[in-house]
Image (cartoon, rainbow, N blue to C red; front, side):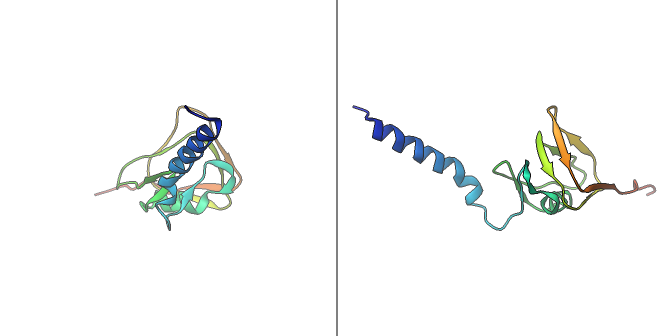
Length: 109
């Protein structure tokens, strides 16, 4: 018979397991997408092709791959340097503070 205590233990264990993917990847910058934590440094690292954690998942952009931003709120405390195609998700993306700097397009051979 499932007791109330067993039910709560199961819920607690599931919560811990859901948090494990992000905890298992220490040292990577995190794009929080919560509007509370400053995401600028992690976004710049991601746009440079460095691995970062977004929504608990490891993400790394390849050369020429567009950056697809998940919906949410991004706190930007510094300039974001953009030199690749950007795709904002189909939902709402809110940028707060900071600035965006789009690099000049590369022309020539």
